[in-house]
Image (cartoon, rainbow, N blue to C red; front, side):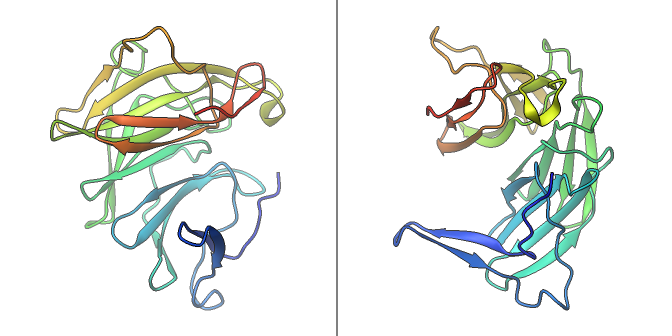
Length: 233
């Protein structure tokens, strides 16, 4: 699959005018820019930064991490994440650190480890856990990771995702999950969230989500197990 190549440009949406504009890097010919890619992930990297991580160039997979300064329009390459390189991984920024989990390395779904990037030191560390679906989330890709604050405590929520890839790769849908897990960043303990209603979103991957307010997560779209594109919220 050939990625869209926009030479380090990033698209910005203005909600006041409801218009999109392309933000090109200020010096694309003299400063490094990230390679074009698909199946990467993005996250807020602080006050003035947008981070992109990993994904698939035309061949292979990546483990690099880049930050884009919106005000200066400059890319900075940061320390790469621990191997293996992957696509369909998830990152989230909270309390000055970037967290990475899950993904697909070309052979299997990744799990059992949270990698943590310390921006001040430009270093990664890792925390391993049992990814058995009982004490911790099972391996998956094309899920999401979101920072959620509940009663003053910071959690990372990971939702849904693909647990077993399709035999025809990107031309079909694999086996999907519909579980929800939260990770306490202080105690490093996972808790499976049990819903209070029988109604819940169908299993899916390749979707997106965001935090609306304290403890509330909204999920939109995605790909179901029957290879159907979903559009509900």
